[in-house]
Amino acid sequence: MIILKDPIAVSSVMRSDNFGQYSMSERYRELKQRTGLDFDATIRLMDFLPAFLDGERHKEIRRPMARQLAVTKKLQEETAATQIAFLFEKLFIPPSEIELVSQFALPLWREISASIVNHNRDALDLINELPWLFVATLSIRERIKINERLEKFIDDNPMNVDDSLCTIALRVLGTKPFVGSLVLSLYQIIAQNAGKKSSEIHWPRTFPASSLTFVDRICKHATQIGNDDFGAGARVRCFTQHETHSSEENGALLFGLGVHTCLGKGISEFVWKVLTQHLGQLGSCLVPLDKEMDAYTEPFLMPRVVRIAVR
Image 1: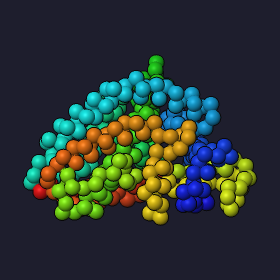
Image 2: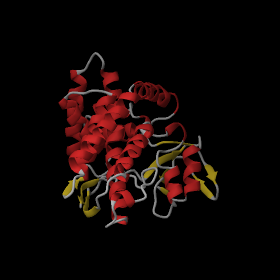
Image 3: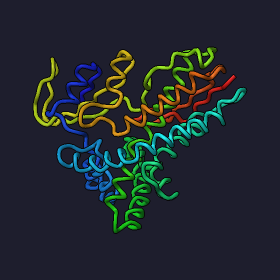
């Protein structure tokens, strides 16, 4: 694997037609062949995730997702604004302590995602589990369990399974990036401004931290970008967020580039704008307490428990 951290090189690779997406469905086909185990349901889902697709298939899958987001945009924004106001009034009252993952970011995301496409309780539980299928260290046993639950979902929706998988994929793609980035960003700013009133903090215009710090690309044929040579089939890890990047460089790559720009960019930016407006009017001090990260969640950096105090 080739590691790229320079933001110019990263941007060039991500924009180049000489590099394709890293295919998760192919990884599961290889796993099925190697182990003899059934991962057909997982493979079918991975074929509905535009982040791992190229060309016409990518356009075919992304188009209805973008349409669904456009149709529900007003409802998403109304839901987000209402839920932020509700959670803010409920949680940010001094003196109090807030666990940002379970009490704030997850409830907010559930309400927003339900405004995009509604699902029953069983489907919501499944959606929460599915991002683990991207994690390299997840055990075979756990992959099988999730595959079995996904297989049951497919069996229960035989008449419209493609539409159901498409909408599930839309929500799966947002869960960890939205929740993780929101929590990490809030905690980072609060930690950097400990002791200040929230209204005195300079709240940036976009997320300063992301739970997704890299994406992988596969070189289609031998090529050169800048001073770097890439052989056909090389796997290239492009760090879109890194401590050596400037805030402007991290911001430019925060939602990806080109045809693979994050579908959730619009609602994410809207949420951050509304939230920081509330925080900018809060006369209380925000105090960082503790942060516990999940282990082995690559490619995500996921907070497990993050607590702050309102004083």
